[in-house]
Structures are given as C-alpha cells and as structure tokens.
Amino acid sequence: MARRTVLTLTGASGPDTELDTILAPLGFAPADVAASTAEVLAHLREAHYDLLLLSLDTLGDALGTLEHALRADPAMSVVGTGPSADPELILRGLRLGAHEFLVRPAASRDLVAAIERAQRRVSPDGRRGRILAVYSPKGGMGVTTIAINLAVACAALAPRQRVALIDLTEDDPDIRLFLNLAPTYDIADLLARGDDIDGSVVASILTEHPSGVWVLPAIERGGRGGLDAAAVTAMLAHLRAHFDVLIIDADSSRRPHVLAALDAAHEILLVTQLSLPALRSAQRASQWLRERGYEDDKVQVVMNRVSGGDAVSLTDAREVLGRDIAHTLPNDHRTCTTALARGVALRQAMPEARLTKRFETFAAQVLEVAPAAVALPVPANDRLAGRGLGKFFHLGG
Ligand SMILES: Nc1ncnc2c1ncn2[C@@H]1O[C@H](COP(=O)(O)OP(=O)(O)OP(=O)(O)O)[C@@H](O)[C@H]1O
Ligand SMILES: [Mg+2]
Image 1 (cartoon, helix red, strand yellow):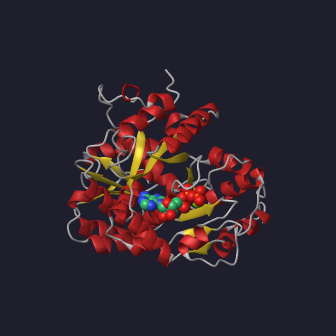
Image 2 (image 1 turned 90 degrees about the vertical axis):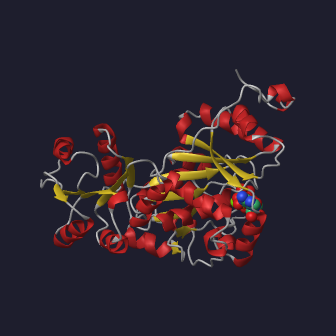
Image 3 (image 1 turned 60 degrees about the vertical axis):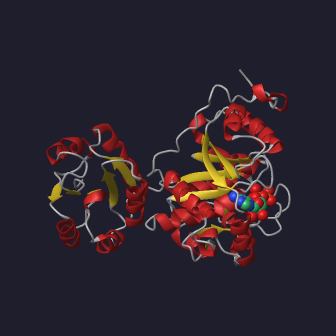
C-alpha cells in the first residue's frame, strides 16, 4: 500500500526535524516542507496530499487562494496550529477548512490524535460522521431552535464538512416551519429504503437547505409510536457514511426511537433553562441518562435563554444537575421571532445578533476545533441549599 503523503508549512507543528519520526508509525512518507504559503500553494497545485499541516498565524494574506485550494481537494485532512488557543485563529482555521486545531508546539501524542481525528473525518470508510442529539426531557426548551442553528453554524464555519439535520419529532414537527421547507420526501421515505441507502438515495431524499445543511424532515403527521427504533438505528449508521456531522432534533419524549438515537449519538446536548420546572426535569433526565450507562462526557448541558435576571443562577443549576454547564445561549426573543416569521435560520435573519454569534462559537466547540467551554467555578458562599432552593431538588451526595 502506498504510504500517505504530508505537506507542512515549516514549523507548523513544532520542529520539522521531529515530524517524520512522529508520522512514520502512522504510515506517512517523509514530509514535504514548504517555506511559505506561496510554496504550500505551489505544492498543492502539483500533487495530492493526504495531510496538510498549517500554522494559521503565519499564512500571510493568501487566505482566499488557500481556501480555494483546500476546497479543491476534499480528501485531504488539514490540521491548523497556533501559538495559543486564540478564538480568532481557530475561526480562521475553520473558515479555511481545517479539520482540527492544535496549540504549537504540539506534543507528539496530541499531534497523532489530531491527525487521526482529522483523517477519520475525510476517510471514506463508511463510518465517519459524528452524531449529536439535541434533547430535552421537557417540551419548548429550544431543542428545534438549537438543532437548526447549530447545524447552520457548523455548515457555515466548516464548508468542507457535510452537515445533516434529522428531525425525529413525532408530534408536531417544526423544522419545516422554522426553515420554510416544503420537502417532497421525509424520514419515512428513507426508513423505507432499509439498507438500500447510497449517496444518490441520500441526495434525493434529503433536502438541501440554502445554508448547505441537508435536512431530513419528520413525517408531517407522524402520530404516536410510528418510528421503529431498530430502523432508526440502521438509518443513522448508513447516514454516518455520508455526513461528517449529523445533528438530530431528538424531541422531548422517551419513545424507543428517541432512545435509539440517544444510544447512537456520540454526544447528547441536554437542553434546559434556568427555571425551577425546567431544571427539575433536567435533573431527572441527567440521572436516567447516567443510569442508561452513558459516560458523563457524552452528555453536555446547554443552558438556553439565559437572561441575567433568571430565578436560578448558573452556579445553582450546575449544582442541581451535578454537571458542568457546557454551553449557554442568551435569551433573545426578537432574533428568534424575526427568524421564525421569515422561515429562515438566525444566521440569515440577524447575522450580527449576539445569539447568532453565540451559535458560531458553539459550532466551533462542537466541531472540536475550539477548546471546550471553561467550567464554571462554584464559589463556596453561593450554594443552592443555603438559599432555600434545595427543597425543590434532590441533591444527591
Ligand atoms: N435563546 C432563545 N431566546 C429566545 N427565544 C428562544 C430561544 N430559544 C428558543 N426560543 C423560542 O422558544 C420557543 C420554543 O423553541 P423550540 O421550538 O426550539 O423548542 P423545542 O424544545 O423544540 O419545543 P417543542 O417541544 O415544541 O418541540 C420558540 O418560540 C423559540 O423561538
Ligand atoms: Mg421542537
């Protein structure tokens, strides 16, 4: 088997001399080293590389040309680096089409892990896509809003990645309404194909939204218990071969097909809000998700509609849920209603709104190129029980 090829901008991951030693066990030939972005472009015009390492802070002003060259070779994995985890640099990498971001100089272990992740994302081995289930145990918490706008932000930030949005809602599905879609086909058509799902079936049954997201709508009038759990599991396994990121609107039930999707998911975004009823139901969900055997890092809490004047603080919420709050989204009624009234994503309706911008950071974190959100510290004098809220919750020790 031919050895894999790598091109690096000089010093992108650390000393060039060490690179070959690190990469040889992964099956790479000695690296081609380019002294400048112009040389990188010249190499890319000449040959296909399996891997490209770029120091994002030393690219100069050829970003547009470079982006074009990267897009022209979707089978190449791209790892970007920078001297620190600067959000601007990380976003630049994403826009350019980098699959991974590393702080330089990278430890060889981290470099190998990033390269393997990047390669999985482009490898046609049929198992590449990452499944994210957006879930809430309670209706109306923002699951559909988050699934849609996260998918749109992922597609915008990482144009080389294929993003699917799958609606598993059975009662009153909303994605058609939110995105003003009138699709010819829906999830029932894909489920009916069984194992006969190839690229052309995917392209004909899913609907491409102008944002670049491929949408699989729910059955318009699904009704209770209509989706078969085993069929949903098989469908997701097939779709993983065709998409890099699969975002599921997993609704707020515990029906078997929803549990099947939660099982299949690599991450579950557990959506809740800073109100007592919302947190109480999220607390119960947090517990049964643990009992279901999911590792703690599979479940990430998303606190939606945070306003600053909430009845419960983020610190309290963290205490009640027994989990860090991985993501927060501001309350922004105007932006949400404007988008909804126009039947477009937030990015299209109000690109500059704080909530829209927040989805960009959220997407960067979800795409694993940005560092995870910093966990909130719990000040000793800010405990829930001390302020009388403890009676509403079971605070396990
Ligand atoms: N961050 C936010 N700021 C302001 N409004 C929001 C926010 N997130 C969601 N909303 C609004 O809350 C309402 C419910 O949102 P959404 O439909 O996304 O929730 P859901 O969990 O999917 O609900 P359902 O259980 O009905 O499917 C919508 O009107 C939406 O516009
Ligand atoms: Mg919904």
